[in-house]
Image 1 (spheres, rainbow, N blue to C red):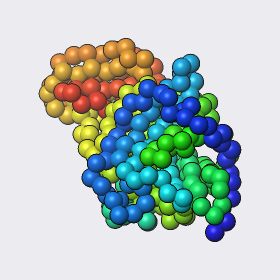
Image 2: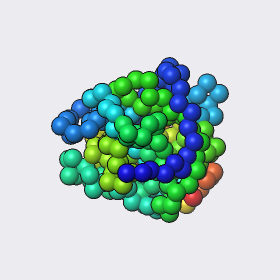
Image 3: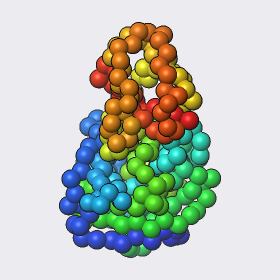
Image 4: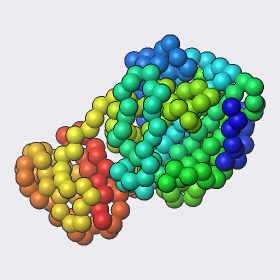
Length: 264
């Protein structure tokens, strides 16, 4: 089965792995134990000058001669637009349809057609080009490095990753991570990850001026630099005015739970 190359990558030897990775999601349930790779962890790290981001997909089984990896990115903070992720080959038979992508990246290899092959698709599901680096030195993980300028301009994004076989781009991954919802990443902070769904403690989201608090508790709203812009005790049903905040991405935190807030 012939594959077309739509991206250019520089394969390194251990250079990308020497980063201080932060775990964004884990999956220890062994969903794909009898097939392919079985995803166990998804992690990220920032480059020294913070103009690039590293993603690392780890798995239970050593990478075979035929393998595939997938990263689906929602880089415009609107997980409802874009194209749906093909997940027809999931071993768990439980597709995670919580997010559409505007950038879909596949890295795979067939033992008959080395070296590593790449495919990238845009928001419409059409082939596109993207330069990034990969590291396959570790048989139990794959690391990718992307420049922020090439994937939306900053690290505010939503992510679903996956592993599979050589046909991952046509049949979809056999295991995804996280199993439910999607990873929300803002300024290196994971807002929701692993296997849990985070309840939204306010509405509407996005908003242009007010957020209504769903339950009583101490509320904090941070900008993406980590500065606290609003902090107060709030009652259920209380409106908080955020008209004065600039348009952008914020972190809403209440009772130990953080959620991404979009101010339009």
